[in-house]
Length: 377
Ligand SMILES: Cc1cc2nc3c(=O)[nH]c(=O)nc-3n(C[C@H](O)[C@H](O)[C@H](O)COP(=O)(O)OP(=O)(O)OC[C@H]3O[C@@H](n4cnc5c(N)ncnc54)[C@H](O)[C@@H]3O)c2cc1C
Image 1: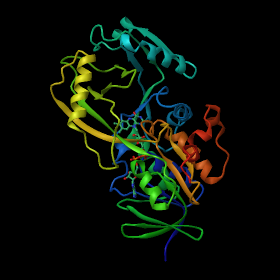
Image 2 (image 1 turned 90 degrees about the vertical axis):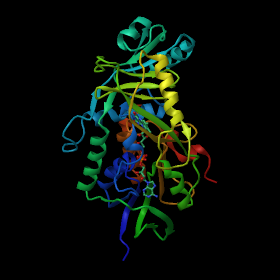
Image 3 (image 1 turned 180 degrees about the horizontal axis):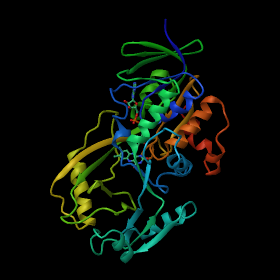
Image 4 (image 1 turned 90 degrees about the horizontal axis):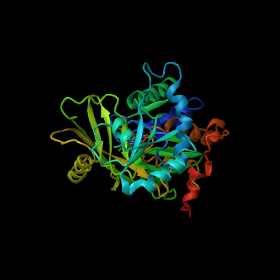
């Protein structure tokens, strides 16, 4: 006898875990994850930053609407704070000043950003090479996110609400049947009334199994490395520092430095590994901007940030096949926006009104709809 669930969520990364927890309050939910460990792919490979000014407008609205959850998660969700404060600084060379001015003009409508001159930039980040920074801006409302605790908190909440997580359960086919979907995994068959596609870099492939529209999702590789700080330099208190054109970033990480070339290299969904060229570009850009000589690389990794063409997430029912919900395209912002995006998605799935606090942050629901991509035919 095939067991029937109200909802089947495909993928147990932050998107699947958070929407699963929201849905489990109201119905039976099965979460299917192809890996042995939830969080193995992009969720476990992030830089763990909440930057209110980062990403397209819908993401910035979702991020602001997520802050309250991060600061006041439900009782029992976690034993330690989810956020710790970090300044988010954008740096501009003299040839990047117009871009900086545009960014300040746009972001100061939404969040408090301060413009900094070259001396203030050097004071805030003493490792900047003399003469590199012409100016910059700082947003003091940024945070580091304890991603592991957040993700585990959602999975724990999901299970406490009666949800079932199955690992080593790769979805291999989806068949639309009377009143819902038949789901075949590697070694079992399930039935669910509604499918929620939270498969990260594989979301387009899951859409294709269901016969849904294409959304034009492109997974893009981003690489990060941990390196030593210069001898005797204490990195504590350093901000996250990002090039205004996102050519690199650096942040303190447990006494060392996390650096990234901020690359966005398109590639097929896979267990992506760092590329030697990414590492070479990264070191070159970092050594150009900072008084640092990278001698030894510690940990290095890469992850896939998946985007549709306007870089905003896709959250909504397919216009082509019934009972198939997209929750994809979170790009480089899927952790910081997860609390609000999951509540938004759950409201659509359950037929509820969209939460007022999310709308109050200026989110236009149409900006997340798969229909905006015009690919349903
Ligand atoms: C280097 C890097 C830095 C980043 N920094 C930040 C940051 O500072 N702040 C921020 O907010 N975001 C950041 N991000 C982005 C963030 O990590 C992602 O937006 C987010 O993790 C996406 O979550 P997800 O659940 O959609 O995807 P994933 O975590 O990849 O989860 C999708 C899951 O679906 C499963 N799956 C796929 N196909 C199937 C199938 N057929 N059957 C069953 N399961 C399947 C996969 O195994 C996977 O576990 C960063 C990303 C990278 C790579």
